Image 1 (cartoon, one colour):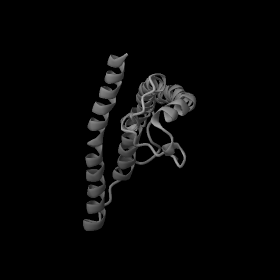
Image 2 (tube, one colour; image 1 turned 180 degrees about the vertical axis):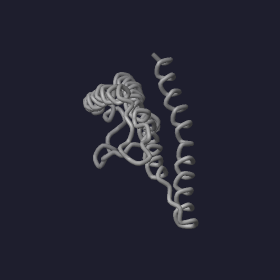
Image 3 (cartoon, helix red, strand yellow; image 1 turned 90 degrees about the horizontal axis):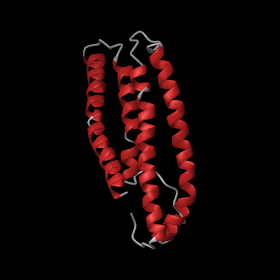
Image 4 (cartoon, one colour; image 1 turned 90 degrees about the vertical axis):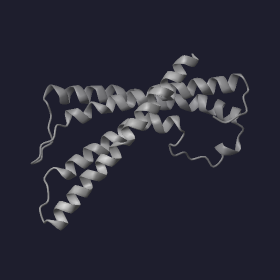
Length: 168
């Protein structure tokens, strides 16, 4: 079981590190558009759409990494006052909602991406970028979050059973 948990953490860590470099590409595209538009008065037809696609991929693929590091936004006015074991027990009842959400996102993402691949979908714009390439990332991102959530759930079970009072 520990090997599984380590493998999930490793996959999401490596994915997060690799995807984090996409922000440099995003900045380069936006900087190019700003320079072309305002300095040379020659706006592009591709920069806005490309920057949206890069940002979408960035957000979709970083979900598991962000979850691994506990950086998702939480409303924890009362939650932080509980001991770690009590929080783990509460989490055991709330994680199934997360699994339902990610399961639906994964299932629907597969359907959406498959439909997009079948017709080689492109954006209905002048540039017409290939949308199917980015729709494929939706089930992948959902899967990464799902396995990271499963890893965290297993850790919460261990914390609740073994009465660990240390925070993750």
